[in-house]
Length: 77
Image 1 (cartoon, rainbow, N blue to C red):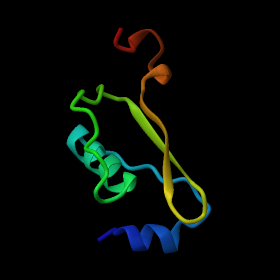
Image 2 (cartoon, rainbow, N blue to C red):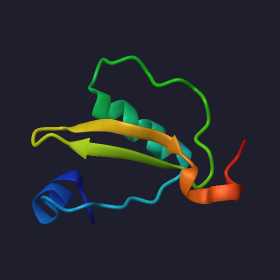
Image 3 (cartoon, one colour):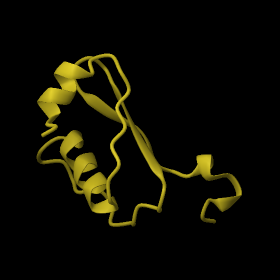
């Protein structure tokens, strides 16, 4: 089973791709923001969108959320 610890230890310095449904992405966003932080807005995550977090060496910081530019003309308007 893959856990945050195994990802941290096995992928240090590498990019990691996680494929998940929108509820999981919203939950991850909330957890990475820190316990006690306000819940993210309830807007749905667009299908095939990409959130991106970048690490600062100690934690992950939200860099981009719901990006659809990679879909070109297929991106929702």
